[in-house]
Length: 269
Image 1 (spheres, rainbow, N blue to C red):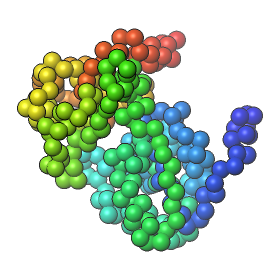
Image 2: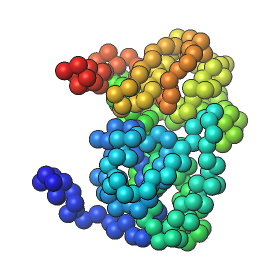
Image 3: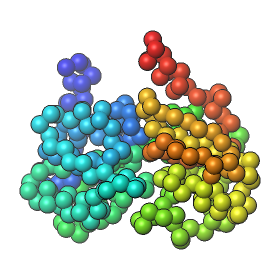
Image 4: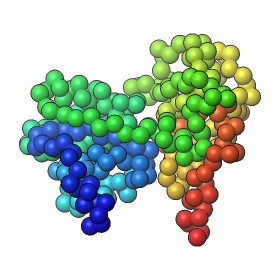
């Protein structure tokens, strides 16, 4: 064990107590974007209940004997029901296990972490929230997209592309959304991108406004697609998971797109 790992092991981290649940953000995908507290939790857990978006490289950081339970929810595919996931967390904690609920990105950024924590609280289960780097922030940085920039925007809006039924959120006030911020960052929006684009256009956004789609953010397989709001509905077979960004911050990519070159050097030497 190197000196830095020794220092990490000796750090004054909180105790991961038996019978408790830690809801931990795993970040956009790359292991290097885990927080130190998330790394600590991986080494202390008895069981990991993880989302589909948690990368194999991150799961591999936990000791081999730690039980891993897949609880991924992916649109259009058979997925565990949210209620069943929460019940499982409670049952595992009541068995005296140290339960790591590992979620892609940040647990409270469209991750339903608030719902799971609420049920844990109502059931008398001790829990801790460990924030993670959201793909809507850190993931976009890997595509050279600053979510705010003094030359383009002083506000940003985060939006989910579907609700609990899997459809475009019906309660969204699209005219208000269109006016609220120059930059809109959309999670889980690829499936309904044609309808979302139409609603934003109808609400007054410009047809030639830049749309940037970042798939597999912060992974070697990261893909970035650049288009416009009016052309976006014509795209087919888009890779997922992906973040969709509407707004002029796209123009900064020609200077800030650092990650492509890093991956090229790593893969091709």
